[in-house]
Length: 234
Image 1 (spheres, rainbow, N blue to C red):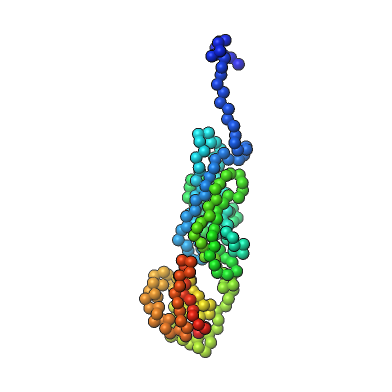
Image 2: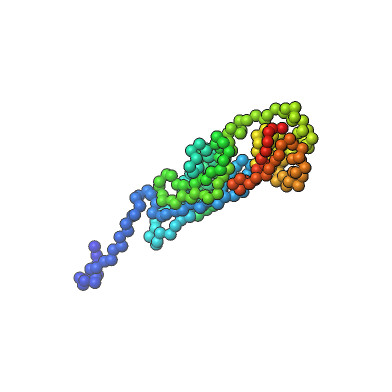
């Protein structure tokens, strides 16, 4: 090497040594998943996801352009989670990739043997980066396959009471309640066509329910409003 002279000061050359804490091909940054529930659509749950970069000091190199995430159900092995749509990221089978520090919206559905409510976690399973997962405190409703397979019960002689109800969504709602014993608020909106129609029904519900050969209770189960049949079928 070349230096300017033979003095001690001139011969000492400061050297900066950079040590890679992460192996080549991996990431020296740390990340954390953020998940925010959005209002659901019919039969579909929605989340807003984000991967935040956590500060690692001035010498953090090699941040990734995309992080792969997977949604999974917590402690419910019989419940299936299907990713339906990804907006702002890229869907890869039942996973998705998204750039750090950007919001991405995802739609997913939950099905299982029976109705229920489960927690969902969002995690990085590929192992190419250090990512803190996020498990949501909110529980999401599962659509039971047994209920989906059930056929509407045929009207018995006593089922003529249904014809005293307005034709259309109201009659269909009470027929389902008679056959299956319960109708969730989300199902009621589907029967009636809109949340506004359900609000109108609420004003006349007692008078309409009085025409049924069974009692109807309105219950709040796990934050979900349900119309529940008390007594036998109509």
